[in-house]
Amino acid sequence: MLLFPVKGERSAYHGRMMDTPRLHLGSLLRTSSDASAEGELDHLDYEQGGRAQTLRFARPAPLSVDVNPLGGAEMYLQGLFEPALIMECARCLRDVEVPLEIKLGTLMRHDPSVESPYLEEAETGEEVLVFGDPDLNLSDYLAETTLLAAPLSVLHAPDCKGLCQVCGHDLNEGPCEHGAQVPVEEIDDELGVPEGTVHAKQTPFAALRDFKLPEE
Image (cartoon, rainbow, N blue to C red; front, side):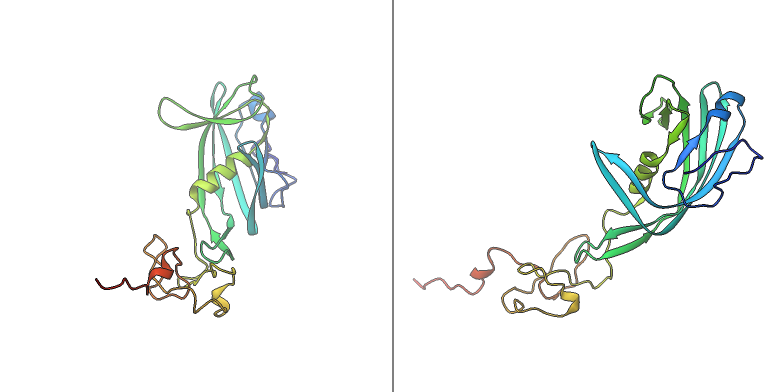
């Protein structure tokens, strides 16, 4: 849990592991004082499309946040989040560590009628985090920010050979019995599979490669 004390007050959770990144903004809303705190997260539980999801981190991810009042119900959140995200290799599905350094900067607005926090686009084009409960769970916000900062796909190694498309064997550990049956072809895609990679691609037309038409 992450506690946000009034500026100058020491947080009991300073630098400790958090189960859930929560902002306790009651004092800030009452007194318009700045608030700041920091801690670490080893994962993020969040909701996407009505389903529970989890982001895994390779090691505890440092999180530091400052919240400054802007007047009225508005405030500004800024800070730094440094997760080492665990993603799957796009070819062989091995875990890949993807270190990120995410600078946080988001307008916030308190609206007591709001049940669940959400992001909306302001007239200026900036995103605003709208929330109702002063005990604000930042999990969804941090997860969305992390996913936007992460690459779409990763490889565990530039020369990853992928999996056999027949049996699923990891070809980085050596060839399998299907090596002679699967044609060696070049894959021209964004990941850039090296030309001549074994099991690079198998097409339904591979069997026609050596088929000869009768001469007329």
